[in-house]
Image (cartoon, rainbow, N blue to C red; front, side, top):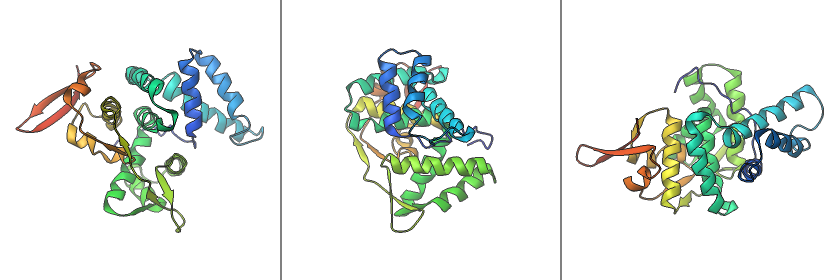
Length: 248
């Protein structure tokens, strides 16, 4: 990952806010209308008060919510559109994988923190805030902006139920992985992971087991499922390695 990566994701975001934003997008509201509705939603829920810092935190949170679902970057708009279609049919209590996928596709820093946590959890039963911060310093140097944003991303992981607090302060364990039964959802998550990686191509097996997807358990995904949206192409490398790449 590039040390110059823009952090962007710098607020503690609740899943219910993401769901609320999605509901407004699906209902056909304009970006301006969604922004106004989010201002009303968050005025008493995020940094209560009328100080400049309180207003700033609300504005940052609203910017994150809008960028993920209402007005994402051009290169992920088709991914967003497919994510919205998934959310139309998936029960609300199962929305987490889609919110996770879009967040890491839009905010690569979120994916960096998730990958660090996922790698550490493969090596040990729990992960500490200190370990995550140390790994981030190795990549980004001593930057308070990075450290502060990482703390908020980690709090999102706890709020979203993918990490659980332990008896030791600042030490967390993984919640049981959510099994992804739908091949379409699994294929969509793999595309999101490829976008977040910043690579044009990756082995399919590497994407399926990517530490950035540590909260989920993906079953077998066929090349056909991956190629259905027209954005991805799967080719065979060697005898048995399928590689996923973006078309063009």
